[in-house]
Each structure stands twice: as C-alpha cells, then as structure tokens.
Length: 178
Image 1 (cartoon, one colour):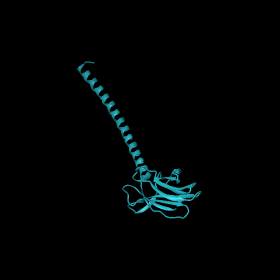
Image 2 (cartoon, helix red, strand yellow):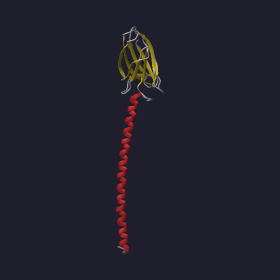
Image 3 (cartoon, rainbow, N blue to C red):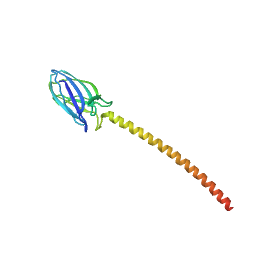
Image 4 (tube, helix red, strand yellow):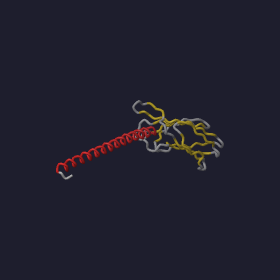
C-alpha cells in the first residue's frame, strides 16, 4: 500500500500536504484530508511475516502563493499499527518527514492509524514557535521597561526626599526653630 495524503487545519484551505508511502504487497496510492486533531485509520490485509515500510512527508499549504511549503520544525506524526487480534504492533511519534517500518506476525487485517503530534496549533509547530519567540521578546521588552521605570521612580523619590529635607531645613532655619 502506498499513499499520499492531505492534512487540513482549521481555518486553512487548501490544506497542508501529507505524503505517505506505505510499501507492502501491491502498491496503491491514497489521497486523504486529515484534520489537525483527527485520526485517520486504514485497514490493510497483510500476509504473515511481511515487512511494511511507510515513507511520509508533511508540507504546509501557503494560501496566498497557492504552493506547498516545507514542513515547520516540531511538526510530526504519530503512527499506530494494530494486528488482527487488536495487539499494538507499532505506536511511535515521528518527525515531519521520514520512514516507519513494522513486520506483521499474524496474517489478516491490520489497522494503520495516523494523526498529527500537534495540539490545536493554527500554523503547525512553526507557528507556535514563532508565537513563543514573539511572546518571549515582548516579555523581555516589558521586563526591561518595568526595570527602568522602577529605577526612574526610585531616583525621583530620592531627589524629592532630598528637596523636601532642604526645604524643611530652610523653613525651620527661617523660623529659628532649629
């Protein structure tokens, strides 16, 4: 089984592209849409002691340019394979591009499930990383401003205190109380 799939994120059209090539006895192509939080499963009859190799690649669709862009760092997919008895043969997180393999030890219908390792991120992990970096820079800038504002307030309080002490001293000297 070989495949090519499409990944649809909420609010994005056309979707990001997920290329999936599962190599088993008799190759076929698959095109599919998968939402960010969706899980897509395929049932494939696989003979006993057969090695299945899956190659995949995720890409993001640029709506403005209408082209596919390379995947952002941190995005990947989770692959889970169950044998006909329901036992988990493979359950693993993978990166944005790569290959997974498993060997069937029981003949019959195997369930192969795929889903994103992202969690409700509007622009995949790259978008999350960008937002985190922007938030960090904003926080550092705000922290720096608060520091300088505190220093300015301290200087103003000290100068006001010095001025008040001089003013009171001159007042009391003028009244001849000191």
